[in-house]
Image 1 (cartoon, rainbow, N blue to C red):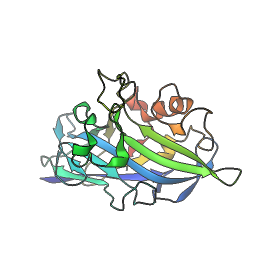
Image 2 (cartoon, rainbow, N blue to C red):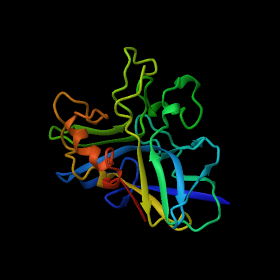
Image 3 (cartoon, helix red, strand yellow):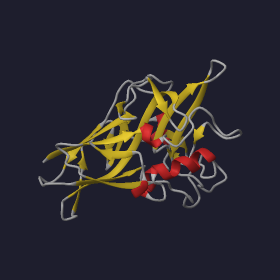
Image 4 (cartoon, rainbow, N blue to C red):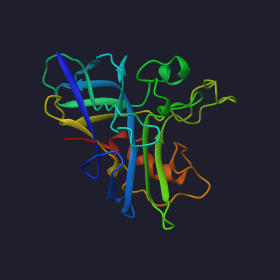
Length: 251
């Protein structure tokens, strides 16, 4: 039967609005304006109380295809956004009682390293493509806090595969990436007709100081495991321990 899994982006339990400034974000409770909030999910499954899982067979449209969907909560307020949004994944699943949902944050390996020029939806989004050698940004959160001099302190969270070997960044990696950084989450207490999957960016950033950045490193976390900002964020994303993540929950 037709079945949908609804996602909602929040910031400290408030609904996300593109370009809005949120107070008390991060470890130093800074004002933080977010202009991009997008992520790819794949392999969505619904689980019965017995633990038996059933894949959500996705509808085909501009935001979802072949088991992969782009959740897009921004509405073009940023420099590389789009006016269209997409926060509910639609498809088909058996008409059963479900109590859990499972999905992977990220683009599957076999679709991650492709030529953007020939990419089809939802992988034809230029701003979600990193470089051919690293593939796509699985999660893209762009924000900034006010700087003392009147400017801004940008702070980005771009999660994707890293440690991808090869001398040519414009070609696919020559071997497996040392850090694929795809994370599979399983959330309890979820019935698709009742609940939403919440992605709370404020909870993700709660241990990060979004008002500053380590000198000599990219703003925020660009998936380099040794970057101090990533050292703080990776555990909250559950990169090594999905059960300890702080980004997703059910409401």
